[in-house]
Length: 559
Image (tube, rainbow, N blue to C red; front, side, top):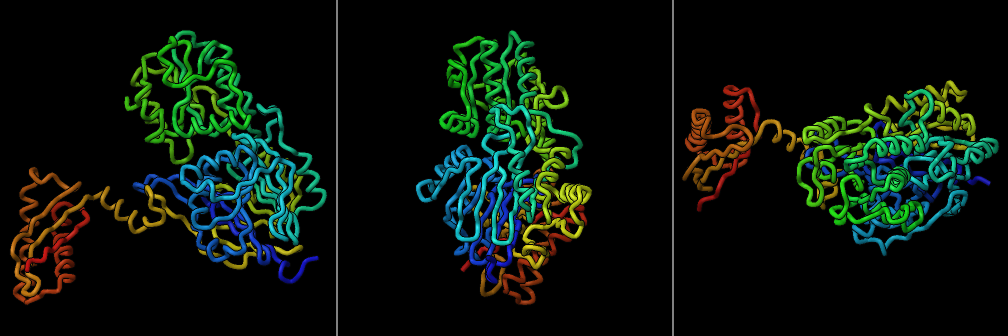
């Protein structure tokens, strides 16, 4: 029976809407709340110096006494990457499948909090109880990482199905297809709310099976009898790496893995039984020199052109153990994530210039997506038959496309909600409406700093990168305001001083005139003097160059 206190369910997206990545959703009912996923996104080009972007946990702090746990759909970075930062602030138990928890444990170990966090394995088909109001059932799905799951969240007001990331693969590498029957059973029992991913919703048809990539690897290995083969792919794609190993074994090659994240995932997947290297196939990277080129395959990270990845360092001759040789065949088995295209194409060009043969999407189908296209999404909608629908995991245009698709499939337009981050969707057994919003946004991680770099700092970094910096140094008596020495002007990233002596001398002159004016008027307030220096120099530089460097006045106190 639904009491007054538990008569409403609040669904609050804290990440993953109107963006790619940073997936995190909060479900709140009465005095209890559950979180689904806690991921990162990667910085855009204008986020200078930023390493990661994580969700804003402010509202979670407000209701921290309600939180019963975090439930994870799968082990990709955009779903688990922010966990160490969250758990350092709010320590609650986490629940996920074995591989997902295994990957999380590697992260928690790196952050030194592994022993402080409660971790629980859940198998597909099992149901966990979180407090009195939430029961969460894990449903097996297919994705580009093993052990992925959708969630049936059973609440006092009805069942919510969260798809996680999925595709419908009838020939998966592990032989376990998505549990469509369970989705149909839940749909027959009645589903209040369906939350379904939108990454590939704009693409018609079906996503190809992961097994199709294995046939391409076999073809490439067969057609490369003399040279080394290198493969760059996502470290989390356990099934892809398994297929590379299978092809290597078939053509009498050894496989070496490089890259920290790749090595960690392979180690974890083997330990947990999600990857089985063929006999005597996997070797350490230090052993590759013992084999002829036609006996070696090197698997690595770097499919997105990441600056510090193994493949990027190899392309720049900056890797200690591997270089690029003429004739090397390098396979980039991934699609560029939106925003990474330039980095990927630059990497391909660098490798080609060094004499390598590069195979990438567009040349050959060496990658398939882990995300459902329209027909697969329609299938799940038709099985679930929800009363209400919220598209998730995608940019705004993807969410809108998914909303229209749901309406075409029979969901009442009034029952389809395209939410923004922080929106509070409140549901009871028969109604749903947006009732407000909570604080949300993005928090920047820069080195060890979390949240100490904000939009103002990013703006300053952008300003410095575009226009450079001028530092004005003046030594002055505080009491009298008399200039003892200076002004000296230092330029960084603006002009080269020796080639712009006339400009710099003119700059010193206008600053000197401003200081003389202050001295004549007995102005000794340093804040005013700094502002005057900045404004005077800014006007001069703009008139002479039509540029606006950052200007930093420094006054040294002479007693």
